[in-house]
Length: 424
Image (cartoon, rainbow, N blue to C red; front, side, top):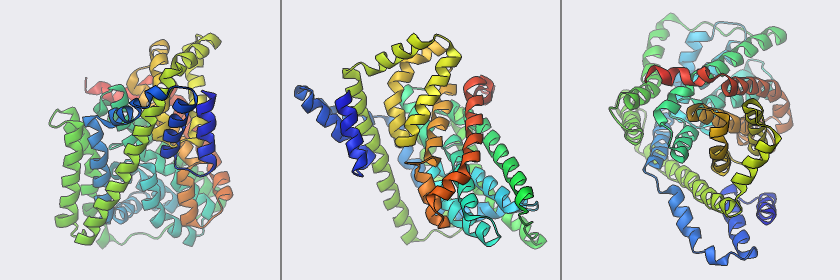
């Protein structure tokens, strides 16, 4: 296994994309360790990794998010958030968090949310006197709400890998997302008092009704998805297709802001993003095959059990391992790599698969806002034109809030299981 790790680390060090690094390391391992007869399994394992009907939900939901974004839904959501919570000291920071929460029902991905919300909110906050690093850090942390609220791409992948109900996973992420958003708002209000942030101007009365009407169709999307899946009207894959048609209809007929050029751009971006996700899934599946050859999942599981048999301590160790992995690996790849270990330890710790899914996704998403490979940090730093080091320092207290929510998700089952339980 050392051979594989060395090859993978070298691939990362020379700037190779993670998906390609996983594949090269797997191929090199098979050749160096004398398993060349298994090379025939390489393409078979890659194809098997993505040969799942449920994985069709990913490109469909990506397309729905791109269509919504191209229809300028981001601006409508920000305006609605301003109307709801903007009239307090530090109101723009609160609007940032609420807009991220509302936009989560469209994107399903932290990077998309950071780009969309950040491009509007970070310049506005800078203009209003907020420190660029703080504006960027708050936007980055708010983007973690996307992977917890339907349609969450990481939760979909977890459901595909484990056979867990995607409908239950969608419901399970909602309360933790609201808790995290609440803590971010409290922090923003405290920060506003300490640094004397301004109170935004009042929105004119004649504009308020139009703002609400314009935002409601976008806000309804996650509700349509969850209710449709849980009521049995459509499957998760059909829900993703419905989301696409809904987004297309809104862009063409309700907002009338989706041009033919924008539609072509959405299709192109969806194809490239989906191909990237599928490549990571395929290559990580090959890595899981290599781990199986070495019996690494069983060895790690037995190693952890040899240290302690306390479920609470095992959960703590798992979270530490996941947090460390999240520092260096893209979340989807890391999830596929750790699932064999988690499957081996799941029965031991007695954690519900739905609760475990929310814990794993939130844990790995925290890595998106931590250096050295925190992709969301790079995005918001570029938008804010602030050094990565400054944004990382400003994000530290916010990462602490994320860890608090993670600890509650891991130790309080009802935080993630309450809503799914209402539908059983």
